[in-house]
Length: 471
Image (cartoon, rainbow, N blue to C red; front, side):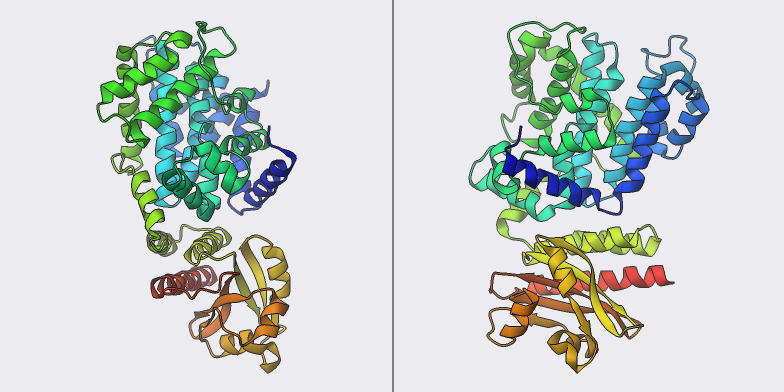
């Protein structure tokens, strides 16, 4: 359990994530499928309607229904309704909820998308191992495997600057993941995952599988309450060993290490693990092929190296946002928050804010922000667009960027705003200033030219996004 101080940090982080504009709709879909699957009056039609909303969910459901576990006749099952009636409500719940998570996060940044592919592999590893070892509910193992890495996904998606710091600590200071997380976040990934799982109302087994499994000497049978936990831990451990770490370069050596860790508890052999890996990879390749996601470009090593070098983040994100804006596939608040998170990493800055011009009052005021105590900044960021508005208003009216780092001028203004070193970039659409990006930090060091260029690129993306929604 987290300490009282860690629990407060955990609760603040959870509330911040839950406030993001993309979460309510996703939470509703997850809770809807859970309610239908557990309700006594639920019909196959209701469940089918939810499943058909996402192609990948339908695909995964049909593949599961056509496996020997469910399809004893050998005749192909071609409809989701037939699959739902054959597999049963609990299995449908497990497949659908797992793939809904994958669908929601796979459209994010390349780094988050890669984490989702790794979660997909863990889910398949857990399911295949469960079926081969005689567990009667392999789709439940699939669900737990898909959510096993939820905490890391949430931090990587919604707190990318902290995620980079964790990667650096693990690499440079040779820390374990748990120690690095406690240093940066004050809690562990699994703590956040358990809170989110509780919020969504997922089965208790998903929450229980977030705990670290400590293999013992006793053999666990499929009916044992810890068997599912052990199988999911095996699936997660296989993914870590084969796809995420350098370790021993010979795959056989990696498999022997996993066999030795779980042999007493599950009785696994190297041959069993080889079959699990082979079948799981085929299943994952089929899913990612249909969704046009390359499976052979796992990038975590490159991500760590880029963070160590201090490479300027943002270019990939800018390109991805530009593509989404041109295709009209975006929620404005969600995209602006993503822009702000990238801006926060660029400095790095302590806070980043999007402010909007109110034409009726001829003022500019804070609307959306990220970072510690950003609400205070947002309330203070309100200026008349006249000479009375000081340097902020003057910069906006002139449509000029303003960078103030380590200078002595504007001291009184900076202290009043609580922003000692800052950058401001007006957001201009068709010659009219609609708002600005504002970011600040305590560190007085100047902004490198490459970071400044990326900041301007983020401003241009924000302008495109606002213009796209205004028609």
